[in-house]
Image (tube, rainbow, N blue to C red):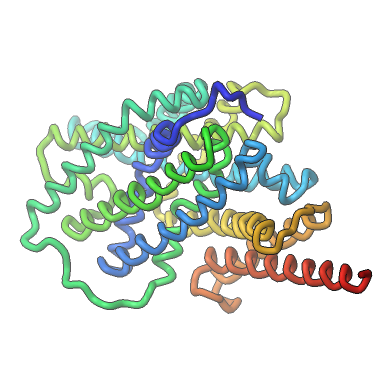
Length: 416
């Protein structure tokens, strides 16, 4: 149970997340959606996807505020302590994977900026190592440091995106393409959900500090109904007008040398704020595996692993990596949300060790099925492996709990 002195308002909770949300992958999702599926399919997927994420986020917060546990402690309640290490490993893989993706884009930005300004070529791996260790060093301060850092950088990040939007609009003769009636593209929807599903799964680590459920839900509504869709739609819109080949060229396509320098700093700030939250969450999960290490050393271990991963060219496999990480998280989230909802719909008050074993088996089954559908050798329910894993996990968990409740009710009637 966390100390009441650490409780935070909806704005404090939101500001930490906004600092991480105004980040490179979220903008890149908008760019990728427009490039691969077109303007309107991207817009539709962003709106529907984030509405679903907002709903999942609200339920996720309710699951963690009773005991105010971290993400891993909360998940252990549903899957059992025996599976704690496997749960921790799944969270760590996702968080360190995000750290590596962010770091890869940051080093690309700095590499291109140095090359264009001075003509000097510095090995990208050296830039990646320097940035990774700097971020790790600055993240040692914990959640209070994250709050201060986010509040300083948020206005700079918002201002930069606003100007990038203005320059994209200024060089185009038409605002948006003609609207068309299109079916939902599940591949596009999957990519939108993959962007934030790890955030949904990891909400307890940050929202256990919420003053109340209302403040937590208000924060979630702001994030998923306003902030994230806006950032993703900016990526769609800017790519629609500029057709940049990557995040650096897309944002700096117009403007002079000063603007190019500013974009370089923006990408560094954007990646830095997000990786702060990634490191905080990863170190929290690592604490369950290495109980004798202090927060400082846990952060160093997580940061070193993420820095090593960032040395590989992750951007060329961006969508595949997101879907792979997302499949683990959607299956887990599907089990937790369905089981929590059952306490209201089925009035299931008891929670047994057998429930935990079934939940663990369902999580693994959902993950394996989602990954299998990505190979196209296994039939898909939705056309998206990540959505498939979520649907299967919810279906199995819901059906099992319903049958269990029917059996319990029938037994009571027979006895009476």
